[in-house]
Structures are given as structure tokens and as C-alpha cells.
Image (cartoon, rainbow, N blue to C red; front, side, top):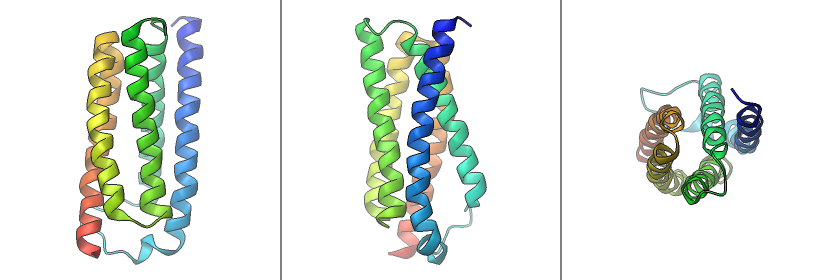
Length: 159
């Protein structure tokens, strides 16, 4: 691993973890009073495991973004890939705010649907720049798909 790749991946992981921390703050608001009262589907995951999986996803996302970034931000495909990445990261962080802090599962569901679509586009653009980076986003896409199904079930069971 080159030092440029290590530095850029570390920086990207840090940015992703900052978004994760902001999500955790929003989550704490809803978990404290609202979320425990919701009816949950049979495939509910405990909050500690849920949080641990998100941390792993943020690390994978950051490493993937660092790999793409290390290819040179001057390249239009790298820029396009990272713009998509930034947009999906914004939608990711916004979901925690919508679902937990604002207690709005339906609007959060729409956000997750958009997030999943943008992740697919991000994977497509990452694949053009680096196959490894694209593969690192696949577990994240699967996890968001699970979150989408879970969010849908919460909305359906509680509306």
C-alpha cells in the first residue's frame, strides 16, 4: 500500500465515521424514547449489533473511497465517482435523522430507497475507476437493502 493510498483511505474512513457518529447521535434520541415502543419484525437486530455493522460499513466505504481518490481527483471519472459517493453519504446520514430523530419511518423509507439507488450508481462509477473499490461497496449495498426492508416493515407494522 502506498502512503498516498493509506493517507487518503484513512481520511475517507474518518469522514465516513464522522457521518456515522452524527447518525449515532440522532439514533440515541429515538432509541431513548420512541424506538423501543415500536412493533418490530421478526428479523429485528439488536441495537449493539446494528451499530457494529454500521461501523464496519463505514470503514469499508472509506477504504473504497480512498482507493478511488488515490487514482487522482483530476480525472473526470474519479470526480464523478466521488461525487456519487458524497451524495450517498449525505443520504446515509440523513436517514438516521429522519428515522430516529424525526421519528418518520415513511420519509426515512423514501430516503433509503434513494440511497440504495445512488449506491448502485456509486458502485458503477467505482467499478470504472477500481474494481476493488466497487467490490468493497457491495456489502454496504446489501446492508442498506436489509435496512430498507426493515424500515419498510417498521413503517407497515406501526402505521
